[in-house]
Amino acid sequence: MKPKIIRITTVPQSLSGLLKGQHRFMSEQGFEVVGVSSRGERLQQVAVEEQIRVQGIDMSRKITPLQDLKSLWKMYLFLKKEKPEIVHSHTPKAGTIGMMAAKLAGVPHRLHTIAGLPLMEATGKKRYVLNAVEKLTYACATKIYPNSKGLYDFILEQKFTSKNKLKLIANGSSNGIDTNHFSRKQISEEERTNLKNKLEIKETAFVFIFVGRLVSDKGINELVSAFIQLKNKTDKSVKLLLVGSEEGELDPLEKTTVKIMQEDFDIIAVGYQNDVRPYLAISDCLVFPSYREGFPNVVMQAGAMGLPSIVSDINGCNEIIEENKNGFIIPVKDINAIEDAMIIMIKDKSQFEKMKNNSREMIVNRYEQILVWHALLSEYNLLLNNV
Image (cartoon, rainbow, N blue to C red; front, side):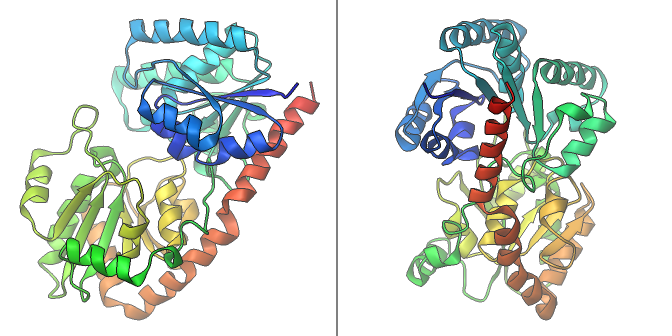
C-alpha cells in the first residue's frame, strides 16, 4: 500500500495556491495524497487540478473557540478513519487543529510548516493567547518547518519549541517557484499592450506594483501615502498597480487610504486575479512593504518575471532580496523610506537596470520549484524510513 499523506490548510485557496502542483508531484512519487480544508468550490477544483482526493472540514480563520472544538472533533474522526502515516499542515488555524487532531489520532509523523506568524503584530492579551496557541501547536507536532531562516530564528528566540524539532527545507519557501511559468516570455507583447491600453497606462509611465491582500498588515496604508508623496516630487508619469482583494473584516485599511485609492487616477486597483503574470509583465518594480511574512511567493514571482523589488526588512523578504543586487530593503512602516527607494528606482537608471538584470537569475538559482519539491520528498522518505 502507498504511504498516505494528509495535507491540511484552513481555506481551499491556500491548498491550491500555496501548494500548487506539489500534491500531484507527491502522488507521482508513490504517495496517496489527501487534501483537507474548509468546504468550497475551490476545494473541488483542487481535486481536479491535482488529481487527489479532498475532504471539506470547516475551519475559521478567527479566534472562535466553540467552532474550533467542532473542527477539532471532525478532524480527529477523519484522521482516525484514514490512518495516515503523515499529516502535514499549513496556515495557523489548520496547524493548531491539524496537529492536535493528529496527535489525538495517533498519527506518527505530524508536520507543520510556518509561513508567517500573525502574532508578530499582536500585543497584550491577544499576543499572550496567540503565543500559547503557537506553543500548543508545536508541542503536538513532531516536526516544524519554518519556511524562512528569519522565522526559524524567531521561533527559537521566543522558545516556542526545541531546536531538534525545527528544520528549514531547501533555501526556504513552502513551494518554490515554477520559473518556466513565471517568465516574461509567457506573456506576449500584444497581451502586454492590450492590458496597458485597458488600464490606460502609457508606455512612458513607470509602473510600481503591489500583489497581495489589500490590508493594513501588508503596508498598504504606508505604500499609498509614499506614492502620493512621490507624485508630488517627480514630473515623470508614475502609476501604482494594486493586485489583490480587500479584507475589510479581518484587517481593514484606513479610511483615508481607501478614499485616496478610489479618487486618484494614478492608483489602479484591479482586485484579485487568478493569473498575476500579465500585471507583473506590464510593471517595472514590485513594492512589498509588509509588516510580517513567512516566505512571500510574490517577491519570488516578481523576481522571476525580471522585476527588482522594494521590500520591508522582515524575514523571507530580506532573504529573497539582497540590498542593491535585486532590490532595496527598507524599514517596516516607514513611509519616507518607501518613497526614497521608489525615487531611486525611477531616477537612477543604471542602478535600476543592474537590479532588473539580476532579478530572474537570483530566483532561478535558489528557489526553482522542483528543488524545493525534491527536498521535501527527501524529508518525507527520511521520516518514513526511520520508523
